[in-house]
Length: 295
Image (cartoon, rainbow, N blue to C red; front, side, top):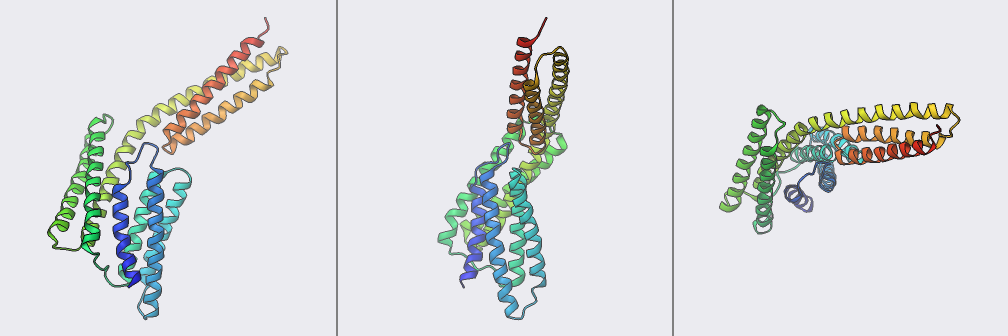
């Protein structure tokens, strides 16, 4: 019975934690991604335990094992995305892994038992309110965004409306006692998935124009660096020692490449920081060139 209780608790924990997590920021929510990965890791552990028990009882576990393998691959992807700082992808892959592990549980053991209503209800009702707050924040961001198409706007709005409907169903289940808390938790999980999909779609739509502007700015910086490099070569031919300035300019080039990489991974804040450092180095080079210039 201990494992069965673990399974039910896991379902409630995954849904509540997902709904109560803070909203994802432009650079991705590291805390939320880490939390989803941890929940997925626990789900995998319990799924494997169920499979071993089913195997010992002579039950066919091929489907469950296949689902665990799919979930493990998604979990590996989530960990890799987390390591490279892509927290949105890490959270999405970790949530998909959780779903695979839950499917494996259903395929290898009995249905998830009910949780005592007095323990599950308050947490789930709070989670429903948090999820509604997230929907409100995404809707607010959607209404203020001027860089997405009407078609995509309708798709995002539709996902949010579906999520609101699922949240209402979950609340009704909890308040009428017609079904179990785990049934409400499943509605919550579906709603959370739709909310996350809506947010990711909105973020990606806004990310394109920002990337275009940053890329254009980086191209300008590269041209300026190339021009400064040519001026340094002219000074060197006139006998001026500019070796240290060439090193500084190389550092500026490295920062530009770093900024481009961070921008492509969605880390706009980190990209802008590298750009600022590169500009400061270039200004330092210009100042030193003026000091060393020989008439």
